[in-house]
Image 1 (cartoon, rainbow, N blue to C red):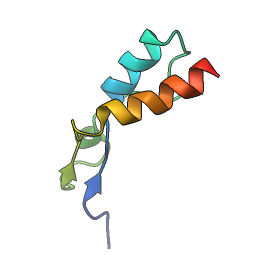
Image 2 (cartoon, rainbow, N blue to C red):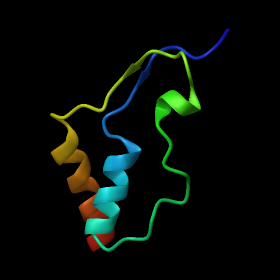
Image 3 (cartoon, one colour):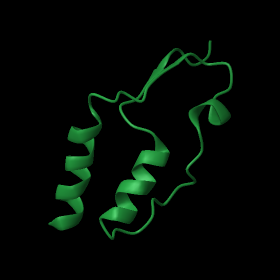
Length: 64
């Protein structure tokens, strides 16, 4: 048994940009593409429609 389909709302590249824009510290893990972490696993994402909402969550976290 292995990993099934991976679904994600945003990418590590997006997170890196958002954290930089917000003046937040960088993520504590390496920003690797999911295809490098789990090669051969079906992936759906990022979802452009959810990007503004996810960015807003990070903005709230780092502006609090």
